[in-house]
Length: 365
Image (tube, rainbow, N blue to C red; front, side, top):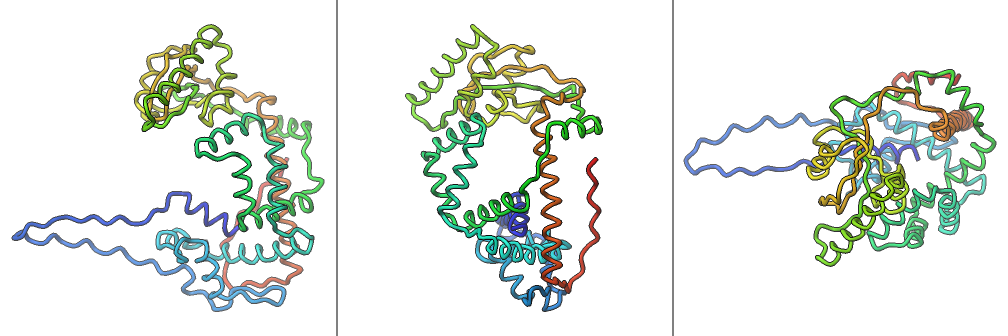
């Protein structure tokens, strides 16, 4: 559970393998001085005791911990780069491994057994709650990979790890999180009590802000496919020239970029962040003006330059749903922490390694 999430996050942060560079040396040239080898970082568990934890009559040994940790990585071994970045974090991984075991045990005792059928039902129910715009984006992205939504659901449901995670999520929602709710009145009270949290900062003066509609096409596509994509973009542009007010609606229904969910808005960005053709088109526009069709490596864009935002207070109506979700998530996190603490106490968990001091969680107002 927490263990896998942490390791996945570490890998997603951009940890990469080393690259070897070879250089030719002229026959009679003096050999180049060799760079001093980087100091080897010992595994973070090197000085740990053989017994790491006891709970529910079980013992978590260092050998078991390392074996389970290595399973999380391709090749069955923790990369040196990851080991270096996890120095000082090992105790939390041990705790996560114990908690994961306790939570899985609680989940199964409550009758939540991982299965393909249960996973598929959970995913399908979740999709029904998904906003149409978000679902449209996912469907378009899957279509580019020549997959249907139904095929993708079947793939996820058949995955054992996904089944386990979904069973756990279902357990949390129907037991620990049951009855937790945040009303609009609760959210508005928090909003008014914490105005500094909802200030919308001004865009930097040298920034650019734009929205776009992307008709995606592979740069290696044949001329016929490219022409069809460009023709579609040109047709949309004709509609926008007649009625610029429908830009956001068209972005939501036609754009293949994830920004379509926000009406095509890319927000503010600095020069150099976008591909040159896109940036050049934005700079050439005035605020509110819509470009002609612009071709980049991603396909065909219709771009609208947007005015930079000034410092302001985000309206409650705009932040309401996000704030309700955030406050609810905080309540759920506290409920989960209380549940975990109770499980640890009941299991008489005893750790044999030291933990770094953790800051106290702030109290909700």
